[in-house]
Image (cartoon, rainbow, N blue to C red; front, side):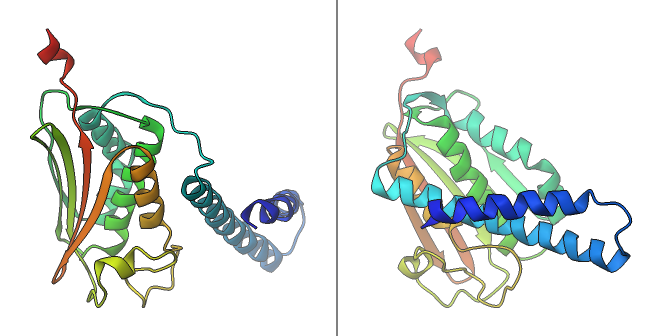
Length: 220
């Protein structure tokens, strides 16, 4: 279904683009075109999320295996999101080892995982609170955790929040499909990791676990 939706949406986006280039349109018509453009973009993102999730769950998505420094990947994701992080007014506390934390996984897919998880904290964290991101190696396991305080009452359990299209803050009417965590979980499992969520009062905690390999430094 998500594949069939792509074709008409592509045409809609193309015609919106043509309309935006028309000269002499009344101001209110230009406003309509801008609204259409934003809604079409949001719909395109939603359909792509559906497409990616369905491929991952069905086993049709290709995953490449390579040696990855998980610490560097997390730092890169945070660096790419620095503008959004600063605008959020949240305080990020990041604890990543200086030495490489090597795992075998798909770097591009894991980047998407951490992108979704960090974006989740930006959307749903209590204003002015702290977000903790930690990476440790314990018993040959690389354990990454992301913790934040929710800005709303989490009246759901771990299993419910993982259901597709379930959003944590049910009162929100802004952007968000509820697919972010489902995609993060599916990608993590397909990348060879474990994915878990813990809820304790207002504390929301995501835990990712991968088999850790000896670092290049250790091999020497």
